Length: 306
Image (cartoon, rainbow, N blue to C red; front, side, top):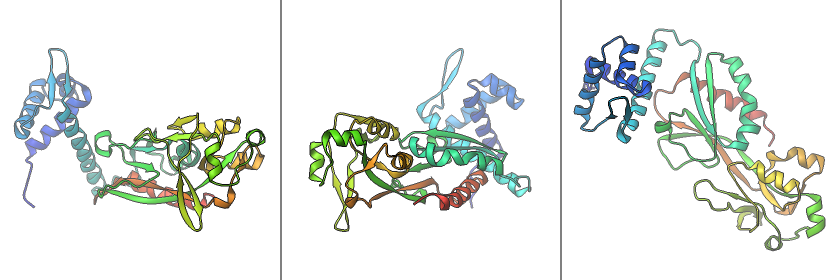
């Protein structure tokens, strides 16, 4: 392997990251035990090497340029991996440590993942957990996430996808709604009913409903005057109040089905599901905290109801 960096360049990267994190050359110099001029020269060397400006400078502050922000995120991740690799080589990283940043859908996080995190931290007390609850796709490098849980594996060959479960779908409504509007007997009947919509964060479009017809999955697009985004459970709450029919994951309303506040509709067309996966960047060096979380989640998923 041909050498790409000398000691001065690696030191410049560290000073650049300190400046980006502290918001100024003086603060970075204080943290590193060098002079502000040394930090300024380090940043200038990097800018000359890259041929781009990394900071917009004013008399009172600095801020990263767009190119500088992307470069910082990747440098920060690379330097963190170097520190962790050194600790492992020295035998100091006997236990996972550091901050685990993970993004997950709102409802799935509340009902599947968040209840497990205290047990994870009890097993690995040196790991801090930073949870991001959202249905939008995230930028692993640009936003500094270790992992994400998503309903569909992204078409990105740089990501590892570990299956968590095929979450079953069911169509439900409140008994009082069915008493007022009647119970659908066929898929065609859905076009005459109030169907609560869930909007995809990526497009703002309503997600289709899935039914098993003659052994194959069939998409049905419905209409309604209620729509929710981000939190699937919002639609369940509306359905419980008699707002209309909703199709979503069974794990969201198992208790309501047992209590009778929601009842299943068209069960003869049930049987469809959507896959949920744990995603993280591929690479030879996976942080120990992430490896621990992946193993923990794969162990816990065995106990989830199917």
